[in-house]
Length: 305
Image 1 (spheres, rainbow, N blue to C red):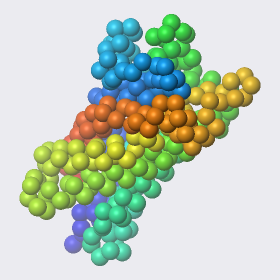
Image 2: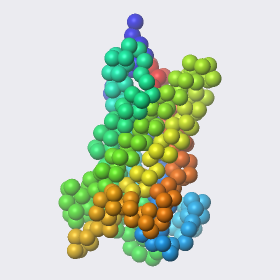
Image 3: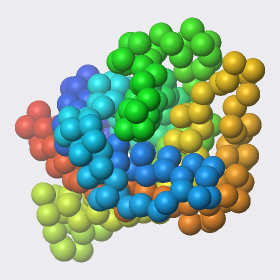
Image 4: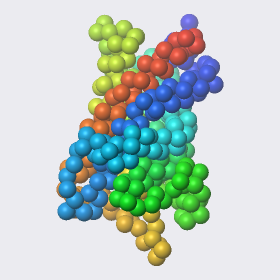
């Protein structure tokens, strides 16, 4: 008789579609929080005199100055990113987990799941990095508009074209190193902790394989992923947002240089800028995604994650 993990390897095309659909729903629902987080991480960049702010004040200012629809600036490349990123990391995790399952005789340790989650997330992020770059640049454009400046890009296609023209094809992978570092940490916390927490609550009869179990597991995984990834997320956002000057000079030479300059100018706490909006987004994002995904899989006759 096949185990649920073995059965879960079937119907890969159905799972690809369901992961993309669930990710689109989750991304659209929580995108305003992600935009606020990005703006908060860029706030005070390399400027010790910048006045402090918080997520609520920043979001309110965005709506007041640019209108409510400005909270969705950059949504289209964000959805495009998830059409690649989420299916690759979810299906990659399940496939690699099944390999560990076969070698470990029916169980996978948390450490193995963390490694599997990190690897699958890193691979997915390399593929999706250009779309992520466009998303960050377009989100940052809103800050320029609030300062009375013209935005750099009129849309995702314009951003893609200008980046390639000005920075070359390789420019689409600017910030890929901190991006992959963040993806490794996020998925190490998110996928492994969701998987482990879900099985823990089911095995201990705290909750069943239902919306209550999925909600509990998503909250745990969201906290873990945020705590692990926030410093890398700040570095990633700043590395991807910087543009090359006419002289070919950039603000940061490397991820390490960005890390050092951020701490030197703004202090160690700056590495966790956007922690609460990040967690506030990861929690709802994972809730919407996992509840939708698990429900869709059940309707399609597939095993649970």
